[in-house]
Amino acid sequence: MDDTVNELVTEFVVSTGRKPEDRRPGWEPSWNIAPTERIPLLLESAKGGDSIEPRFESAYWSLVPSWSKTLKLKASTYNARAEDIAEKPMWRKPVQSHRGIVLASGYYEWQGPKGSKTPYFLRYPDGQLMGFAGVYSWWADPTMDRDDPDRWTLTATILTSDAVQTLADIHDRNPVILPESMWEHWIDPTVTGDQALVDDAVRAGVAEAETLRFDIVGPVRGNGPELIEPIA
Image (tube, rainbow, N blue to C red; front, side, top):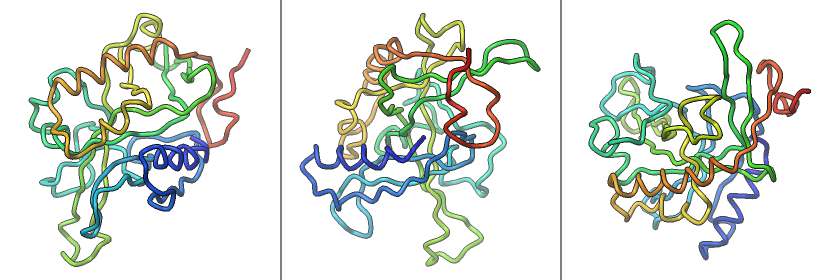
């Protein structure tokens, strides 16, 4: 993910009728992000008693429910299956009102047997940024003072669905990719999220995923734009 995410956030905020200064993008480029590291998240909420506005935040990539006593969980929560998500205790409340867009220039998948997997990078053919449907939760560190603002950590997950046919040979699941026309509705906290909303997102995501280009890339080690360059 390069720093064009900052430009995209500004353009999105302006498109909703707000002023550019209503956003706070400050993403540092990264081309190798793993679960439990930081991901760029676009959400809409009130902060400090202010009116509801779009916000751009850095989130811990693995959703941690508010009732957890620790930030690190035994179970993997960096992805959430979209099927019946609104009925599951872990995800029900975030789906209802804590939905966000995880921004990315693309994503990696690995194909092949363990020990000799081939990495692919999937992206839009024109290089535009993707918006993954996500949900988030604020986690408060119980070991810190209740008045300490640093006790709060924003955590998030990315929704997935069955892979589209063109990508099924690479992986059996896809992240749910939303067209930009759906972003504002998805992140609107006044819209009560339910399974129907998620299913609409999945249907839109199928159309987006079917357009993706996928390229074999080199070993995903280190961090730099060369990681996503196709190899012959």
